[in-house]
Image 1 (cartoon, rainbow, N blue to C red):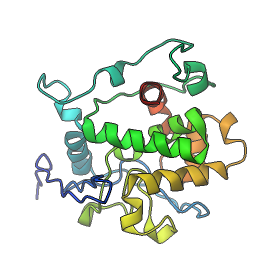
Image 2 (image 1 turned 60 degrees about the vertical axis):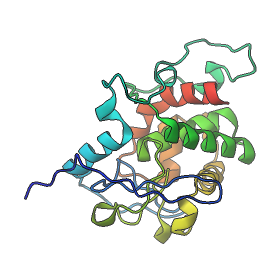
Image 3 (image 1 turned 120 degrees about the horizontal axis):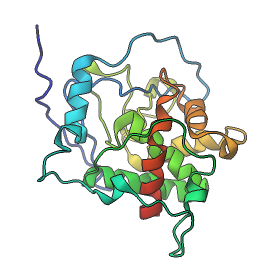
Image 4 (image 1 turned 135 degrees about the vertical axis):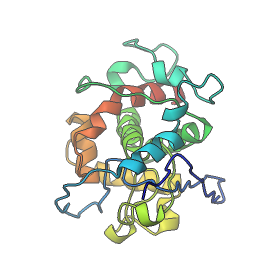
Length: 235
């Protein structure tokens, strides 16, 4: 039976900080699987469900990218290219010290995504991982959830993965309420990143993969440039 995944329904849940957790009907894993910080990934040979990919594309704005009325922030999808910054914001050299790996992807951003990006950046400041850590975090969330704070997706959920980083309660990341709180989820991600020896000197995809233990370890690299643009402009 063919299921129409172009119809999606966000289920909104707000915490005390008025962050939203979005559940999109028919959305499966977005290409990453966040195991616990000390867990070992089991072999996975299947990719995201075809219909789920279509649904998340619609939910994250890909299907609206050519819509002139879409609520997107084009300045965060084109980005600056300067090597230095004289306005107190981090320079490109600080944000991308090793250069990007491979072809880069970009998506339009709405207000919910920008709010979640700010939460990740604030957690990066709080945990002391700095500008480069923020780029790693934003790029990881772009891959895992397109910067949407996803709740449980029912039958199409990837195991029990939820939130900005698709972290799993069963792997020790926290309760569902915790990992769908952007500040908690980002702080947990950065705490695990800080336990990766020499993460600052690693390529972004290696640093992210060491924390996430994803079935798609090279997917994070494609978001490095947009993540740097976001961090540079929101820092």
